Amino acid sequence: MTRTPEQVQLELEVEREQLAGAVKQLRESFKLGPKLPVLAAGAASVGFVLAGGVGATMRYFARRSRERH
Image (tube, rainbow, N blue to C red):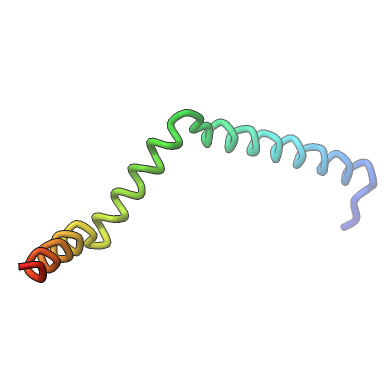
């Protein structure tokens, strides 16, 4: 089954329009703007806690406290 150049051109145009629509949706969904620093701080905090950072930090300070006395 062969396609004519006009058919190929029409298919390409339809795909371009679909791609443009998808790019527009992505751009709109990722508009974080002024919220970005807050989101980054929140993500860092959650990562710290999930990695056991609070317990490790408390053990570190407790150990330093015992070593000084």
